[in-house]
Length: 289
Ligand code: URA
Image (cartoon, rainbow, N blue to C red; front, side, top):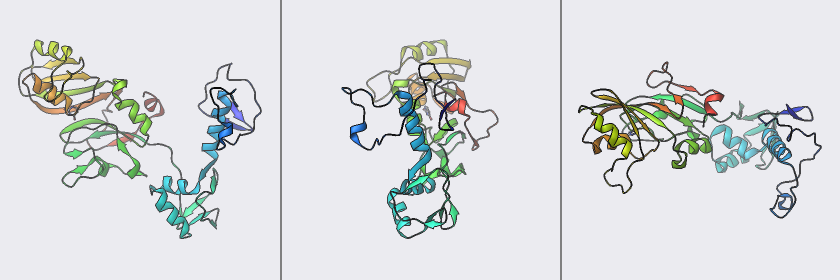
């Protein structure tokens, strides 16, 4: 384990190359002179820089950001709350937005403790008739099923239609969700489809060859159609176009009556989750993407 003083540095690679002991004082990286430039020699090794970032993130945060991250307020709202003398650190009223909050400080807002929580990663069994949106005037949103802190910071990783059920990922980590939804990643999604017309072998070839979707120039990327029985199939796709699976079946003259997402990447929907239920992903599951 790498350490700084007696503090462990978590999550670092542990190779011999990175394992050299080092002494270093945290440089002032707010000062542009200390940034590495291509022409300059690096001012720190990779490990030192990672250690610096770890310590900086772990030990301090500006007070306005701290209030905003723990309450979901905007930075502007947090500044107003600070100016109204509603926030204390270790029992002392603090109004200065730029004040650095140490890791072990007890921060209170109107006598309620404010605690930082790590990023959130959830798996939900999306039920029927709810939308993947933060607000909707006509339908229930998937967020109304959640009882988690910082709910207004969460977003769904891609969307499922109102009448699609199944695996939905929800997070506040934009980079993580981007890795799943970015077309470049070609992340696998597996859907179970129930259709109105009999499925035939020819359909497998059509899905593999790519289908012309109404209103689009480019055919779909090769997809795998696994026929389960005359009116049920699994569809493996690596794209995420609007209403993609329904439109693919429409392109072969069929009609999806029911659609359920079983898998994203190698992550399958937990069989224990009933529609509307959710749970936190394990660290291993988060690391899949
Ligand atoms: N394809 C669809 O047609 N709908 C979904 O909800 C997901 C994929």
